[in-house]
Image (cartoon, rainbow, N blue to C red):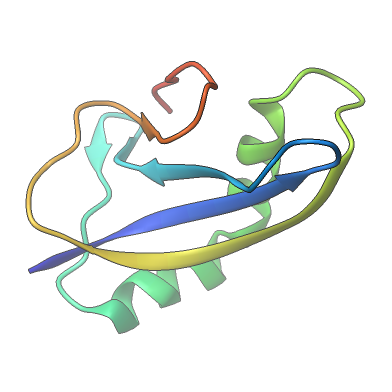
Length: 91
């Protein structure tokens, strides 16, 4: 099994969180062999992840909160997988 970074963002007035699974960055797959390595990557890159995830929304979107986690995955996700009505965006 591999691990990928999952981002949860709560937006004021939006029913439920917007959830993103980050697949790659700068043409490099973001896959981790252990949950610990995934969490270390989040910790080392928290500012970049926060800036990128908020940039997916229009300016002045009322973001209430956000969280980053590591999700166990079985196979590759092409580009950026988004499980909401937000358009997919490759980072």
